[in-house]
Length: 166
View 1 (cartoon, helix red, strand yellow):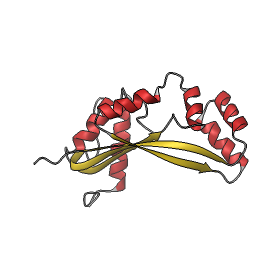
View 2 (cartoon, helix red, strand yellow; view 1 turned 90 degrees about the vertical axis):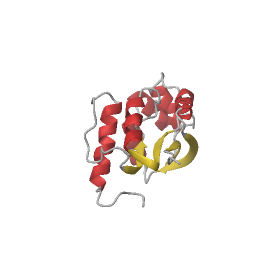
View 3 (tube, helix red, strand yellow; view 1 turned 180 degrees about the vertical axis):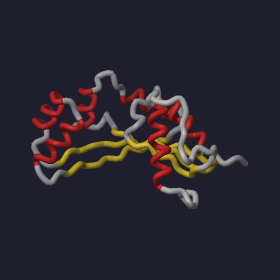
View 4 (tube, one colour; view 1 turned 180 degrees about the horizontal axis):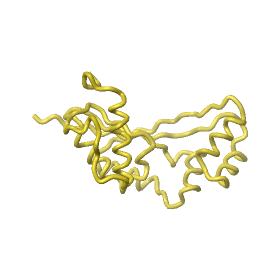
């Protein structure tokens, strides 16, 4: 069974929000419906930990609530994949995607790269999304470079399994 019985999706959302608050320094402790140690089979974080270093408190809390045999899965944007990755690095010049990957490798995570394509129904939607994702200057650059209705975007999937004691 992937999820424990009688647990709601809201409880998982509360855990995710609590982990984000902890990892961003907004909280000293996590209070959530699933805070019992070794109580969940899967902890999933999406576009929350792409910096790597500095997210140790959130990772430690995720590990604490994870059952033996469970997995911690982190899905983040892959800033090494053009063109989206180039735009991302232009907006966050101090970000080093290679250092972030090394961080997760040292923490015992596997890495899988996932190529995707964002598809938009029209140019206005594409522009709206790019203006949400990036600063004005980088969004303008992205719009000039992206003349169609698709954008290649890479993701990284980092997974670490909690071993079952022999």
